[in-house]
Each structure stands twice: as C-alpha cells, then as structure tokens.
Amino acid sequence: MNPRTLLPRSLKATLAMAALLLPLSQARADEGSGQAGAFSLKLEPGVAFPLTNPQSDRFEVGGSQTLKALWSLNQYLDAGPSATFMVLPSEARGDAGTAWTFGGGLRLKRPHGASDVRLSPWLDADALYVRTGSLNRPGFSVAAGLSVPVGKARMFWVGPFVRYLQIMNGTRAGYDTNDAKVLSIGLSVEVGPGVKREPEAIAAAQVCPAAQVCPAAQVCPAAKETFVCADRDKDGIPDNVDHCPDVSGPMDSWGCPAYKKVVVKRDKLELKEKLYFAWNQAVLQEASFPVLDDVVKALNDNKSFRVQVEGHTSSEGTDDRNQTLSEKRAAAVLDYLVAHGIDKSRLGSKGFASSVPIDTNATAAGRENNRRVEFVVHFTIVDTGSK
Image (cartoon, rainbow, N blue to C red; front, side, top):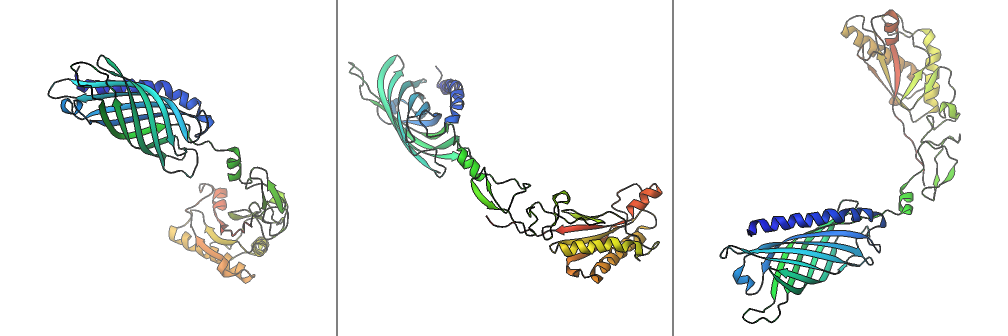
C-alpha cells in the first residue's frame, strides 16, 4: 500500500472515532471538569522516530495519531482506552511499516477544574495490543506533556507531548527479535466538559438591580451581602434612580420636587412652557420669567447639575442671521440665570440656528415649535455610596 495514503486514511478513522465519542463528552459536560466520571477526548498527532534496529535502518521518520478517551477517577487521575495508528515510510523498499495499537491505561495530571490552573503537566502509561502487518504483539507506551487552557470556558487544552512506544517481540527463528522502539513528538488537543460555575459563584457576581428602590440598607438576595443604597436627600429613592438626588421629591416625579413649569430629567430640564423673545431679537419677554424662575429653583435644588442652554430657530431668514440670533438668545437666558444666583461655571450656551428642528418648517405652527430654548444637562455627579 502506498505510504502516502496510509496516514490520511488513519486520520479519517481517528476523526470518525472522535465524532462518535464527542457527543458523549458534551452530554457529560454538566458534571464539571475534575469531577469523578467527567469525560474528555484527546487527540495526539505527532512525528514518529524509529529508535532501534531494524526499524531505524529500514524506515524513515513518519507520523502517528493517537486518540484517547478519558474518564476522571478524581481530579488528579484519569483512565480510559486509547488507539494509535503509526506509519513509517521507506523510500528504499517502496513500502511502509505500519502499526495499530489498542489498549488503555491511566493519566496523572494537574487538576483542570481549578480556575487558577494555567498550566497542567501530565504523565500517562498504557498497556497495548499491537498489530504490525500480520503479527499481533503486546506493547506499552508512556508519555509526558504539558497543557494550557484555551478560552474562559476551559473546554479545550493544548500543548506539546512526547510519547515512547515499545513493541515487544517474541522468539522467532531467523528473525530479529529486538523490541521495536518508537518516539513520537507532537501537539495534543483535548476537549472536555470545561469548568462548571457553581451557583454560589454566580450569585456572588450578581448585584441588586440598578432601578430597585431600596431602604437605607438592604440585603441583596442574589449576592447574600448587605448593600447600603446611597440616598443623599433621604426621600427613600436611591441616588442611582433619583433624578434630583440633592432634594427630596416623590417617586412619581423620579425624586424631584413638583415644579410648576419644569420637569427634571436625567439628561435635560424639560420646560412645560415656551420662552418668549421680542420679534427677531434676543430680548426676553416678561412671560418667560416664571419659567426661568423655576429653572433657577431646579438648579439651586440640584447643585450637581451642569447645563448647556441651547438656542434654536426656524428656517426663516439667512443661516448667518439665524446662527447669530440663536447664540444671542441662548446667551440671554444664561445671563438671566446668572443674574438670579446660578454660578456661571455651571452653565454654558450654544446656538444651533435651524440645524436641529423638532417640527416641520413648512407650516407656521411647525416654525413656532422650532423656535425654542433647551436646557441640556451635561453630566450629573452621583455619589454611589459605599457597600
């Protein structure tokens, strides 16, 4: 048989065996790595070197493929069957030396289940039945290797190995009866159940829902730990939910006082009424003062708020004129707030002309809606408290 076709055929055979055994590995995955009965599957493709005569004289460097099925007896010791195919080509003879081995044995390893294990050295030994040509012989193999986990699930372990195989020959007249000795070096790939996360470990990683309203101290059932929910204004609404963490208010307004003309939100101060300016000017009309007074009160109640006053216009007029008008109107509102006690360092202003419409500019009503001033909260400093 052509030696070039032997190894690929053996690879197909071992992969077919792996395909049959892999579902068993997956079915046992819930048992966890290192637990008694956990199953893993190991492939060892390698390069094979004949070490002694007559094999070293007759054959060249070839290849080997070992498949092992392993069941955990405990976290350190595995047991299971193995199968190996080996081919050693011979350019001079035009044929190849082949060997099939079947057997089983034990593996001693560093436990795979511990999350702190990043390197697992291992040793194994197998008693074998060996088929070479038409001969049946006993044999044994011993190996050593090093494996590292791949991925957080730790289902896959890869690493180098060295395996020594000795095929024992009986007494036969006219034949060399020295034992055949072959060394294989390669990279092992093992797939197993991975690390099972214990329910306690999962629970410890959980936290109380962010939106949960809790008293000053509560026990989070999932984590079994006591958390102190920060509540600076003592209104019973934790700061991570409270839109106004510095002033008390009911839950139906997200912890904010019930302002008459302003709704406090996380990202903006929403006005219930429009601000009015003199036509085509940046002069505030008196009708706007009650609205802005509520803005002043909301900012005084919430010292952590920093807002940007944004001016917007409709599309009537030139872009340059609209840009200038929107900037001046935003600045006029900022000046009103400063004049009524708001620190200027907490404020900013910007004009957007007609670039950010909220309604159509094709109708008078739409254009009126687009002429507006908005108060955008840049950021909120929230003290999350301590655990």
